[in-house]
Length: 527
Image (cartoon, rainbow, N blue to C red; front, top):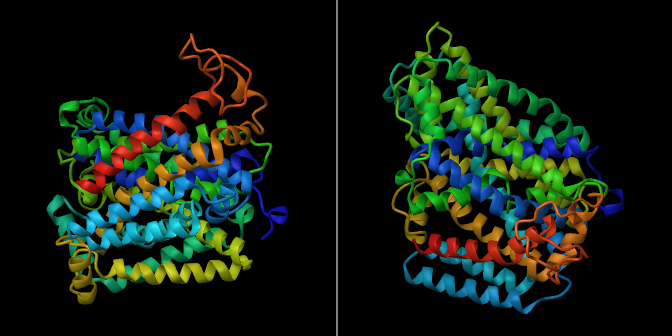
């Protein structure tokens, strides 16, 4: 697929809604509320917002610039921009090798093998390995993310058919546990249904598929979210839930919570998965990357905050625990909705899970599109057969998660492999993949991306791409945090004095983000 004949978004609105749809997924409405509940509420929210501003937005600008500059998939984009192998790529390969040896010595052979494989890819491909690893990570995430989508599809049916009549969390938890343990075939069928809807969103292309669906689904998602919020905050006792969510109490926030906030900032914005680079490759040159990225980040962050307001006021109003973990929406919320006065709890439960289905679909479509674009770019495949083959492969991989969600009885061979190779004694295939991608691969790939943009491609060249379509916005002294600053750093390309938007971005990407992100990643892998 040549860049000359490549599709493009119809305009800024199409890109913003599609990119926001990829970001506003289960990470916002499922994962963000439950990790907020587990980390003390408002203090975690503040740290998360700080991570979004300091790392999320700068990294999103990097990825959009990489995609639009090259008009290629993540692997092709990094390969085109690195020009030639660098000593820094070799140094990173050595560090990854040392990290793998350290993990192997601690008995974590599976994770050591992952780092060892990444090191070999760096030795072979240079920084193009970042693009390839991001695509692999995206496909792994989709394989278990789609299973959560299958659970939600099931709960939409249960809600509207009257199958969620629970007054106690223990009842809801027991039903959900039995559903996972005894009905893997049903989950597999619902996985096929969810993946079929996902493939249907992208099979017609960028404008006629993803963009057209996003323009319908995103406003519908917002409407449903607001409806659930209005009902929740008007319940007696809802004020305590609002206070828990928005009132910071830093005594309840641990170092692990801070690390989780950073990891979730990447997860929530769909960064380091190849999605933003892929979507950016379809962005026209006359579009303003700065304002586009700000809109996407603002919509994503607003959705995360609204997701919390949709859940915590109702949970506290029903006097239930907010720290239920991943089972919050499947165990606590069904009991919460059924207790709502008026006998209409099934309606609110149905609307909530319908909203969750939309959020899951837009994100899953973005993940699947990144793999499809890669195959179309690199091997010149046509869209329809590429979508069908990728859909089939991810669905088959998802069956592993379907049959090993709570335990390994259905897959004893996989059980032995995970316990012996990854040194994991508890959890499931789902837990393993989530830890591997969210805690390891996303922070590592985010770190490598900012290093590439700041030091390999170069902040000056990246800044030129960011200025395309900005009509001088990036050169204006809109941010003057250091009034005494005179002269631009040599990696920027502006004659103005003062700390400009581009200068601030360059400083973050080149110096601040790599140091902090590297420190956090080291703490994660040594924990």
